[in-house]
Length: 340
Ligand code: FA5
Image 1 (cartoon, rainbow, N blue to C red):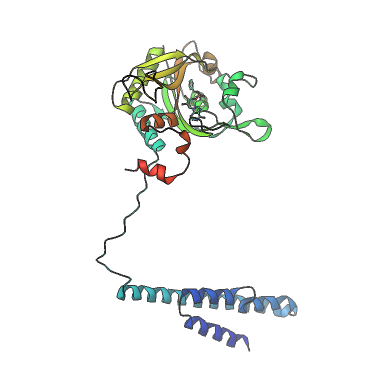
Image 2: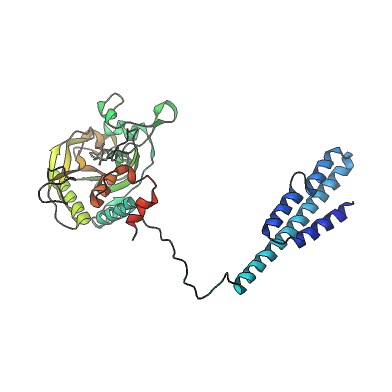
């Protein structure tokens, strides 16, 4: 059979295809390796060289003709299906529409947005920084040299050559990047994802969220820090909440503190505050002069405070979630509880 007849036969079969499944089989048969086109392509290498060019062009034309025929028939069948639906039982314009599934914001996104709102209203810049960070910004510039024991408390994912790159273990490196670029006075917060090589449990994830805060200005004191934290808590919980400071050690702040907030869930001790009436909220302190210096800011002229809020922990607290692993576990049944 000559090539023209082959093409005509194929076009006739396409025109007769009774539904999309038959058409799909036909497409495989005609355009596949052993089909009409495949056969024609296979013959080309065995042809005398002067005939190969024209044979290649003919194969391309065949492919274009078959593809056009298949597409046209697919469109006809789709139109016919639609028409049948309109006439038959498949379509009833009076039926109520199926419910639309609504997505929702992740609770971490919601609390982040709320915090951004609170801090923007106090004139803070909102910054972002890289999740894959240089060792310098994550540790060295924060007064944590290579042999410092504080590195052990933030189990690190090292990546890149010679351990120069890490997945940031906290949002504090954004502080340093910001101080390098900005001229004091300034205030900023930087929410984001951080990573630690943790043995995970109900309160420890390998990937979680923090929000760093930094204020640099003249005569910044612990009083400014406490006042700002109380404003933050008022914004989140909608009422005045007492806070207290305990000594804490972080090489990039001096003095360093752990800030606790009065339990918002009870009057006399509960599961969340473990009966103490205080909830451990965030580490903070006055920026260490060496950190200011490393970023090119004169510590004899400027001072500042910094804090590192665990966002995952805050979401757990405000929603009574008992396991941090639910947050990024991807279980929609968990997340659907927060839709609104
Ligand atoms: C820091 O990461 C310091 N960069 C915070 C800081 C900033 C101190 C500025 C002083 C000044 P720490 O390792 O304690 O500190 O972590 C801060 C918060 O992150 C903790 O209070 C906790 O809420 C949260 N966090 C720490 N590890 C995990 C974890 N594995 N899973 C979930 N949340 C965690």
